Amino acid sequence: MQIHFIDGYIQQIYLVEYPDKLLLLDGCTRADVDLVCDFIGNVLLRSLSDLKLIVVTHMHPDHAGGAHLLKKRTGAKIATAKVDGHWYSGIDGILMHWSDIFLALWVAGRKNKARKNLWYSRKLNADYYLSDNDYLPEFPQWQVLHTPGHTDRDLSLYHHDTQRLYVADLLVKVKGELIPPYPVFYPNRYRHSLQRIREIKPTHIILAHQGELPFSDINFDHLDKLAPKVPVTHWRSVKAKTKKALGFK
Image 1: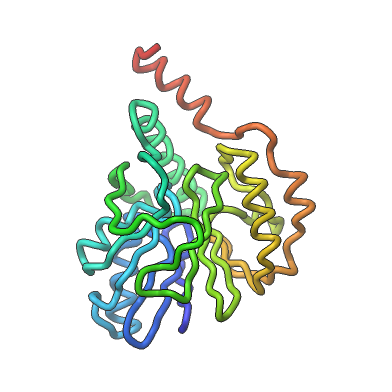
Image 2: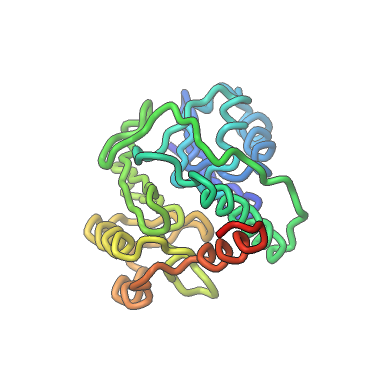
């Protein structure tokens, strides 16, 4: 097994290579679809049909945005968390979906990236809905862990043989410091997820935005102090302003 680290539009892309198949640890952005397909075909010199599974750890644009298009091009299946309903449901969900796409474009601008089309469906049509502690279909070396807090359906993926853990946006690194992500919709769940990762004690943590680092580099006591005690989201203010502008009460 080899994990290929690919620089995506606003996040890292992790493509796991086996002799007979490929696994994508997250659904990346719509802007990354060509990049992933080019890497498979022209760098790995493999057929696009070798991509068997795309995991969507949560529904933000840089984790779910490319999933449906990649499935269409490669025939891969999509797996995500077994959580009731859709993250972007109802009027609130529509507005939050828009705001998250705009936020992703803002991040791209901060990275001096050209503006690209990031539009994607706010409702995920997955092939597999995975419960906590399940194993990935076709990839039983990878265990699924529910680690909510950032949203209600965050997944982490643990590779038992190498003891490496992909945590998506559970942690982010800003100016060299590990901090909680923004937003954190569910503070209590977030703290529980942090504690769970701490107890697993993997050898390495893989982040969606800053690559891989040794588990020993993580100061969990410091993270616990930084973790919010109430929801911290851009969405609260965006929702109020957008509803007012559109005439909703």
